[in-house]
Image (tube, rainbow, N blue to C red; front, side, top):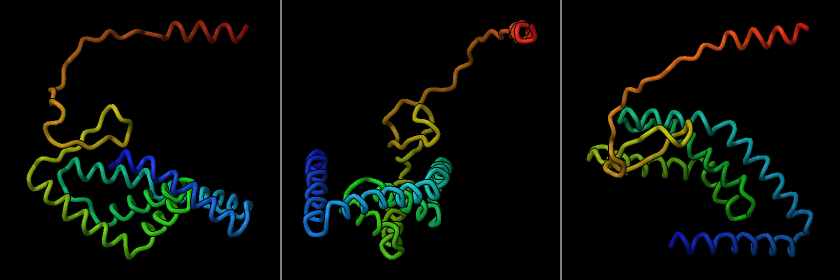
Amino acid sequence: MPFLLLIVFPVLELYGYYRFAVAFSFWDAILIAMSSGVLGLFIMLTQGRAALLQLQRALQMGQVPSSRIMHRVLMAFGGFLIFMPGLFSDVLGILLILPGLRHLIVFLFKVKLTKFLSRGNFRVFSGGFGAAGGFSRAGDFPQEPPQEREAQVIDITALASQRNSKKDQ
């Protein structure tokens, strides 16, 4: 099913742009694509990174994230959908930004997440995927204890002073 979605959705987006350009004009289609890209980027920048980090922090503590955090994450995802070129992704992004549908999605997600957290088979790890971390089910990755390693400290003050003396000459 996901593979079919990866093929059908872009074709549907291209067809939607074609029909829009035929009904209005090519320049109107370009204007819609450019303006939706700028709007989506603005929404992602204002809502995105902080919301994802707050979501990850709440999940690491084993808590259900607050509704405010969930709303910000959905708005950031809606901004991403608006940023993507395509009329149908723009419509989906706008639906995620509108409060009515977003409240329903947050409620359903919190119910599902509460069930996962109560069973104890949902955990968040942070490492290897940048600052935002990633999600996994318990047992997907073996848990390794932290290891102590020997390290050698190198003094670089002599290198810095030689570099400065070359600049002075």
